Length: 308
Ligand code: RIB
Ligand code: CA
Image 1: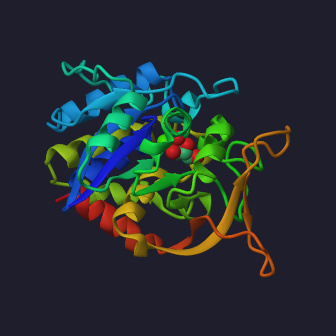
Image 2 (image 1 turned 120 degrees about the horizontal axis):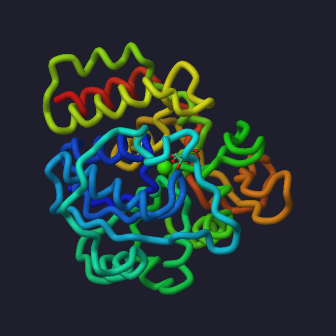
């Protein structure tokens, strides 16, 4: 059984990633921790509770995390995800409640008490993980691996020309995580921008009425209908679902080991993930970086899991 915790800022693609993880055989979603990013953490936490309730998984705890980045002013992305973070989808109020512990305290307790290894799939800004590293480095060091959706190794950013959204929101937290020494896999825009779902792919949901398929279909239909994001012309980049896929089956992408650093200062390049690919570099690699993906293979896997 692959035990994962998803740290998330739900968000349309976050919601799809959570549904994908719930549908994957052999995967146990141990909990969701929420963080401000696509939408403020209050809304993101509400969305996490709503998603789990809609698919009958209120057994999974949701712990609310950081409302603001460690240092910078919060930026959000309602223009992409809609004001409510879920493409304006009209959903019933969840009856389940958020966990009593904050995300960092819940992570700390979970990591210190778990007898099994736990992988953290981080699909939002890394504020919670940065805070955990500062508060309890011993607990942080118990993380089996962090697979994060973020950054751009050899392509432009999506929020500035240099920076991808999750890293730009909290580059200081990202720097803590990247230099922590915990096994790290970066699933950046180099691959997630190839994992595109097109309107015609919705046909795969025809006649599928499982809770996962129904929720995913409604969310995707709302997304295409509202065309909430200028960047998703023609399709929806499955940024976060690909990170879940890599955590469960690293072979779904081609990866290479590199030395990775995060720029936390400046204006033009703040939030850039700088990968050292110089053959003569003396920097020891500290991350596995995804560099290519077979779109068809991943989309088929993703759609198969959600429609069966
Ligand atoms: O840049 C894409 C990432 O930022 C995704 O995780 C998306 O959900 C947003 O958080
Ligand atoms: Ca996200």
